[in-house]
Length: 307
Image (cartoon, rainbow, N blue to C red; front, side, top):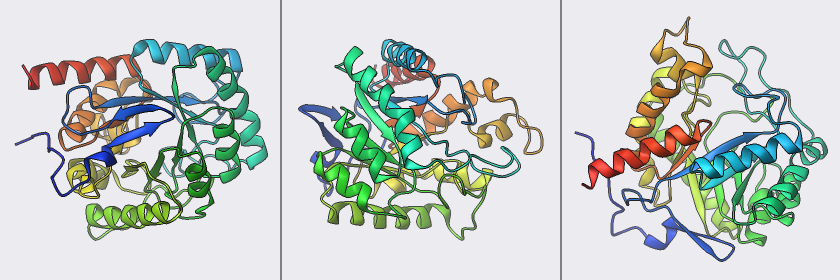
């Protein structure tokens, strides 16, 4: 039976209250209004779903406004695709030098801060130089898809701004991510890896941390589904859990077949169904391309649960 798992008393409830430059983002799982949509903004030419759509600053800022209107609590701006290599996506995304990544994201961050000063902006990067530039320009959160496995300097930068840090589990890094790893117990091993990432972030001085099990990164389709169902185990780390299932290949395979997944633009309902399970298991941040349907879906689900 599915149920929303409340935060256990052994956890520090303050760990689920993210301080974002004078504001508080309540990420307590199972609380009406406590699930937040993080809208995806890829300012890249090669992202798997919308690469090239928002590479110009006017187009990117327009999309920020749209996602805020559609119900996004956070806008996640990324200048380096994490598309993995493998059967689903071919050669994968190329690595991007820090200077080029800064050139992509910084004008967008600056313009978004100017146009939407109330918006909470996340920078999707694992490079400390990019994190520093974005936070200095007014971004609020750092989203590290490598979980600090290659450098803890990104955590040091986040700590310097008292910025929340998202730590995601994956194998490899952007530009060199394999499509599948090997696990004896995917939930246990991902939890252990994330616990190590949390420890390193705390040692660097980061106070506010979100953990992401990395749906679609270095796991088989079956392992992705197992991991999503085990989101409650990830919650045992005592930190807000973020999930990102939107349009992923595992959803395409689920709706179609592993050798013939449904097209990317036809994965919305599968993404929403998987999101529901993740939220019911304890996730409180949902990273999504389709912001309005996701936000409305979550509002409807909570309305029924708490009627």
